[in-house]
Amino acid sequence: MIHQKSIKNNYHHGDLQNALLEETIKIIAEEGVASVTLRALSKRLGVSRTAPYRHFSDKTQLLTHVAIIGFERFRKHLQVSKEQRNNTILKQFQLMGAAYIQFALRHPSYYKLMFSEPLLTENRSIALEVASNASFNQLLDILKQCQQAGVLKNDDIERQAIFIWSNLHGFCSLILEGHLPLKKQQQEDAIVYIQNTILQGIEAA
Image (tube, rainbow, N blue to C red; front, side):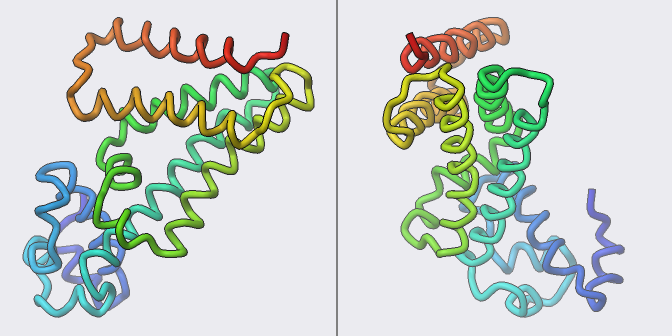
């Protein structure tokens, strides 16, 4: 937890930008994106109203930076499954799917901002697009490896990726928006079923 006094003391040492980003995530988690304003942040962090504008010109730029951080953390979370070299490439692929759902359910504030925030959808920067593509490219890469290993159908990789992403994103969104109120065991069973069904659809004969 960021300490108020520490923020005030460290502001002149260049820590305010990171403090603004971390505090924004807290506000989104507690109150939602609509409650994020540069004025509210300056009040919470105990700095002047103009101080945040030295780092971010407006709310859109601030949220864009937060979303980029989210995509980078998301990418690293997915990467862990690929680094488990003792597993087969197919198992790494399955672990990546599990990691996707795990990230979304553990970090709903990040996930909703990254994929569902209208303000960023309407004002998508090049930097945000690059960050988003980096995680999608991981999926393309592991699908290519699976095809080369002969464990998945030799179909169009991008279409396969869209099929997988649509299924995982749809499930996560329904959970996070409260449209699919499942108990813990039901949720775990649903995840296994979704993963198995996806695999059945693209697995090599």
